[in-house]
Amino acid sequence: MKAPRPTPLLAPLLALAASLPGAASRDCGQAELDARDLSGCVTLTHMQYVGHRNAIWLSDALHSHTQLQSIDLHHTKIGDDDAVALADALRHNHVLTRLALYNNKIRNDGAAALGESLAANARLEVLSLGSNGVGDAGLLGFAKGLEDNRSLRRLDFYFNLIGDEGAAALAGALSAASGLRVLHLDSNMIGDRGAEALALALERGAPLGELSLAYNRLTPAGAARLLAAVRGSRAVHSFTLAHNAMVEGSPAAAEAEALLPELKERAALAAWLVRASLAEYFGADGPPLLSPYAAPVRELRAHTPDGLLALRGLDAAALAAHPALRPLDARQREVLAGVLEEKAREAAAAAKDEL
Image (cartoon, rainbow, N blue to C red; front, top):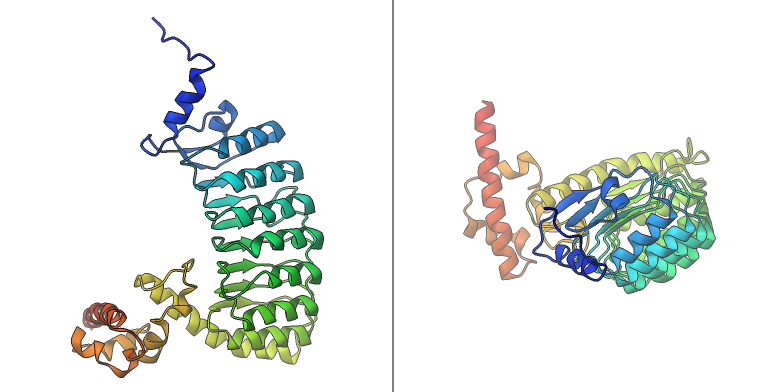
């Protein structure tokens, strides 16, 4: 005998029970969205088409869903109305950490709504809006919400229609207390005024670890201004302004080339700190280079094989007493000394194996 179908009153209660933290977790996609059953879903990916009705239904579901952590709706013809509905959901959802909306049809109204929703959202970490049709008006609205947000870690706005006004609005939302760590603005229409605003944000202490501005409209003056800010930043470990046509062949291009070894060094240091669990790329306290461990590790060259080999034979107590670790507090010295002792031992073993 077939089991009885849930009554209209019982169905939503069953769906709610299935979405509780104790319910079984699963990765979901088009089939689950079409069936309008996201019970137990922690991811929603591999979508082909959403449609306005499904977008509205998904937005409503996100108001109360307690498990869905990542949604990928790229290339699903999402438009402004759909983005506005999703923005409303973000104001009420405190679980979702990643929302991918690149390669869609989102314009200024949708982008502004999504940005404004960030003021009420303290959970979303990654938002990708690349390859849409967002211009300066959309960024003006977006920046208002970003000012009051501390959770967003990565923001992608590559391949849009952003000019100086939009870039300046975005830069104005960045402060030393900002949560943003990665900002991709490649393939837009940003010129020197936008570059100046972003340079000022870095000089104010905006804790960006990664900034990309390739394929924009910078002149040598704007590029030089940004390069100086990046060089002086304690946070940035990855930066590019490649393929800005007016910069190529200029003194600013030579400056960018001269900065590459320093950026390579910073990137290697950041990667080592992350691998050693001493920092995180999306860390709440800042990107890897703002970790208190960054300066002593760089001074000791401990992020390189030769630097670690120079430390072999020193135990944790000797390492904790090293002058390079003096700026750290007692607990930090203990943690770093333990890591250095282990890494030096591993480097010595690897060097021995190569003989």
